[in-house]
Image (cartoon, rainbow over all chains, first blue to last red; front, side, top):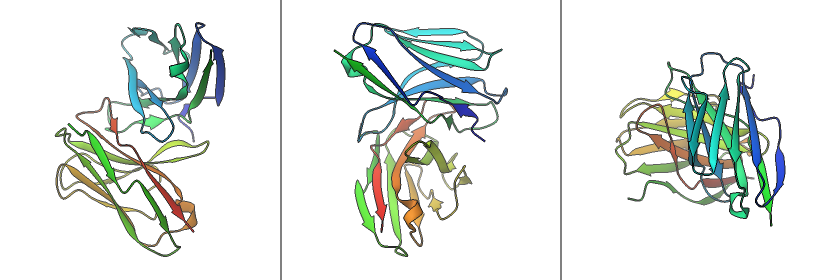
Length: 112
Length: 111
C-alpha cells in the first residue's frame, strides 16, 4: 500500500514558468513532509520541508503548500530554471517513527 | 566534512555471492538508513538504525542484514545475492526525525 503517492511520473516546463509538483498521502498521522531533489548518479538532496502546523513554507524560488484536509502537498518552483531539471521526491513521517516514507518521484524537465 | 560516503560505487556479483556495502558519516548522526531505488518504485527503506548497536527492519528487509557496531558506520550485507537485488543502494543519516543526508549511492548488478 503506497502511503505517499506522486501520480505524475514526469513534468515538462519552459524556463521562467512555474513548475508545480504534486504529492498525496493516505496516512493521517503524518505530520512532517519533505521534498528532495535528485540528479542522475547522485544521492537525493534535501530541498524544503513543512510541518503539519503550517500550510505554507517558502525558501527562495521554492514554496511548499500543505492541505491537510485533502492530504495533499505541492511544491512550486518559480521561476523554473534548466538546472532544476531533476527527479523530485516527496517524503513524509509521523511522530512515532524515525523514518521517512517516500513517493515514487516526478521527473521535471525545464527546457530553455 | 565528507558527509555520507558509500563504498563501493559499483559492483557486479554473480547469483549466490555475498558482499557488504559500507556507509560512513562524519556528522555524528544518531540515525542511519539503507534504501534501494528501483525504476518506478521510488526509495524503499531496507533497514535502519536509531543508534549505535541498534537495527530495525524497514519496508523491504528480506535478503539483507545490517550492523551498526560504530556510530559512524552502517553496513549492509547480502549473504546470497539474487538478480532481484539488482538496484541502486543509498545510505542516509540524520540527527533526528527530520532531514536525512544521503550518500552518492552504490550501483549493484547481480547476474
